[in-house]
Image 1 (tube, rainbow, N blue to C red):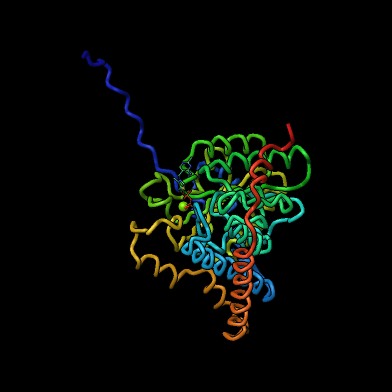
Image 2: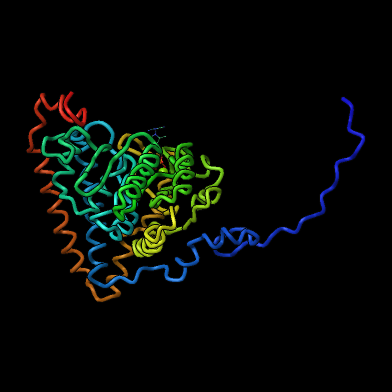
Length: 369
Ligand SMILES: Cc1ncc(C[n+]2csc(CCOP(=O)(O)OP(=O)(O)O)c2C)c(N)n1
Ligand SMILES: [Mg+2]
């Protein structure tokens, strides 16, 4: 093959631009830096909660933990069928974010690991457990199960089994907020694995282009089924992935409910001011396997134990509460009451009837045809 006579022009060596220490964005892209919310967040990284609020966060996180432990037991007993994905370890994410929502206006959508997000609304654990066990009293009449729970009353739009699909649907919810001028925003959660789905980026583009009121939240629990983020993702700093669409990112410790709540304040304010979408990465960890049928052999026991010992969101807040004057006994009493509530929910579910066969034909279409 004939070589070109002219040697390729050498480019003058370029100085590597310095990067911004906070956003890590190149210093020559000032526009991006202006769009970053990390700086604002770093200024007050932990939410200044009252003792009362902290106690509420503690109770809510503990309710999720105990509920999920019970769900795991009921699954083992064969009372819950199909898939069941537990949220243990990730409690601070749902509580930190959803405690900052405007319950009358805002909507939420997530994947199949959804029990915690339902409980974060204060929905009665009985109807959630009844749903898990496929009973008529369940919040989706026992026909949705673990992965497909809805509460339109709370503007909670599921519970979705198709990885990443909830992101595009969340874009639609945000468009509805904008179109109806109802002042609400959509909080769309997805996993680190889902973050590699193409439709996520199609949604980013449209959401940024149309300035939609949406907060995208990557719950990076370090694994997508048995694949660690490092094995499956070229860029594991998920908060950066909106940059190409001019969506500002935030990097948040998802094991600290006060930090998540502080981040929620910054992100929601930005969206409510009409400035368009935000991408938040919450770094967290799931203690249990991907689903109940996963023995989690792709990681060591020591790795999980280290998270439990040093990063647990409930233990972390417990420490802060005790420093603020609560006693071990106070917190034990709360745990006792929550365990009793969860036991009642399990009894209620076990003793509720299954939906009658004609229910097979209802809720299939919105209207009768
Ligand atoms: C489109 C699609 N592809 C694959 C699957 C199978 N699947 C179910 S969960 C999952 C992993 C998703 O991991 P991640 O997004 O990190 O969420 P996590 O389970 O950690 O909460 C996969 C690949 C699916 N349900 N849908
Ligand atoms: Mg994951």
